[in-house]
Image 1 (cartoon, helix red, strand yellow):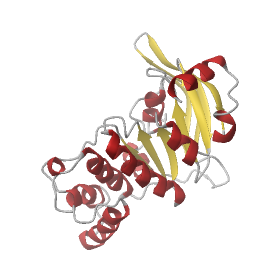
Image 2 (image 1 turned 135 degrees about the horizontal axis):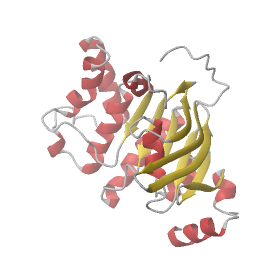
Image 3 (image 1 turned 90 degrees about the horizontal axis):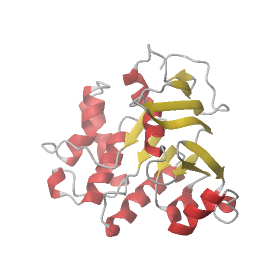
Length: 251
């Protein structure tokens, strides 16, 4: 991205008073939060509370109506924003894996660095094989998505995002479509990322995972952040009645 004068002592992602509507429906009603480099942030809340919309705004998939989103000092809401440059910095993994069915696992991972970054094939393949190993899929390099389980496909999707060497990773309910037995293998891959210092923003319903890996948890309801805090106090000492009710239903 362009030189913005950003330094690592400032938030890597800074969200200020963000409003977002779809037609008459106001989904985000003045959301603000900061994410420092290396932090893991979990956004939780009931369905329809604006969680997924929020992180899609960070990646410029949803334009905001007002407010500011800075990524490394770059205004995401800038009409002149180079979205490709932004997405080199901001990786995103979705609930649906969105893999190319006619490409093998390895080819899916290699595709963006080859086509978008124009990097040398040999270098890209070496890095992609290392990523396959990192997400525990050695031996599946030449399998097509249809030959992989949901959990394996999701780990390919994570490796594919990492192949662009992003500075921050967004995860939007990445375990929601998985069978219970495959959820853990995906969470382990994300946990490994977090332990390696990757900045992560996760929308998740996995409370045990959030408690274990998050530095900070944000609870959203009806388009606003109701309450937030580190897991140690958030889960044991929630103050707002809405937070308490939500936690009582899912814990």
